[in-house]
Amino acid sequence: MSRATLVGLSVSVLGTLSSLGLVAAARHAAPGDAKARPWPALPRYQAMAVPADNPMAAAKVALGRTLFFDTRLSGDGSVACVSCHRPEHGLTDGRRRPVGAHGIVSERACPTLWNVGYQQAFFWEGSAPTMEAAITGVWRFILAPSGPGRAGVPEVVARLGAVPGYPPLFAAAFGEGPTAENVPKALAAFLRTLVADRSPWVRFQNGETGPLGAAGRRGWAVFDGKAGCTDCHNGVLLTDLQYHNVGIGMDAAKPDLGRFGPTREDRHRGAFKTPTLLNVGRSAPYFHDGRVPTLEEAVDLMLAGGRPNPYLDTALEPVRLSSAERADLLAFLRALTVDFEVAAPALPR
Image 1 (tube, rainbow, N blue to C red):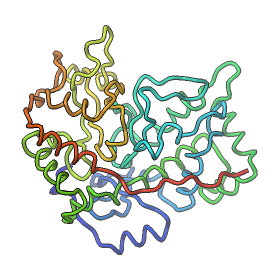
Image 2 (cartoon, rainbow, N blue to C red; image 1 turned 90 degrees about the horizontal axis):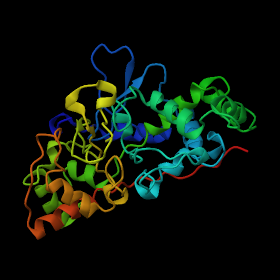
Image 3 (tube, rainbow, N blue to C red; image 1 turned 30 degrees about the horizontal axis):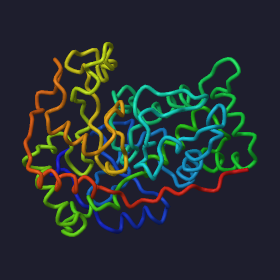
Image 4 (cartoon, rainbow, N blue to C red; image 1 turned 120 degrees about the vertical axis):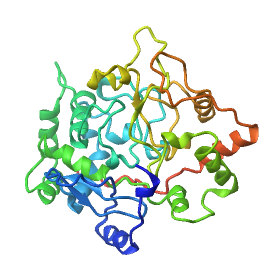
């Protein structure tokens, strides 16, 4: 999404959303797309494409927020969505590999959820076409994997229905009790409200000069100019939503081939989705396998042009920065914080 397409909208729209307890934004639905309906936009954001079978509603968002924090959504009751998407870690988990129910360790690092409603496909390799499908996959294989002695999704649904406080919440949101279909819909509705509209970056995009600080503004000039970071980390989302091979993990005996999995196209071997840089100062470790522990190392790896391999993105080239330019670049990245409290609700009993 180019900077030119990101338009500001009136404060009255934001006020309307706030009165509903909702904050949401994302890309416009394609003209004539009967499967998506635009959701009202916020300043600097376009309207969100929301599936027609899962319209936004305050009761649904409230239910999704509750489920996001509830460990009873997992088969063994040990983890919730927030266990891997922790607000204090930029909605990641601060570990190289997230751990789900029954100690199941994921193969890839946990991606942030900031502005996830803008995604056009989900997961690092883009294998899930909708947020609802992505959530269903995580629920079935990470949070509540079925198996001998394990409570799978059907058992978890029954468990939620037996909690006295949950049926009224589901009835208000869907007109029915919990099901394997409406739980992901509620979670998706909540995730679509995780929009980083209250951030120094968006304020800077709106014309304010102070939010990033002097060093951050100099770092933005490096980021957008000499370092060429905006080739991929562009627009208000700070991502092109495309897939690139930067060489991470390609030296393994059996490398993770990323986007090649769903597309089977050679140009996608080892390519992964460009992550947003919002809250990047809090979301270490970095890259799809979480192998880079610090922001400084991540920056240096990219300034070096990635790691050589036969499928390295052709846009990547080494960039030489002075120590002052590098310091300013890091200052800019650390200024990309998000002023958004994701507070835990009271859970039904």
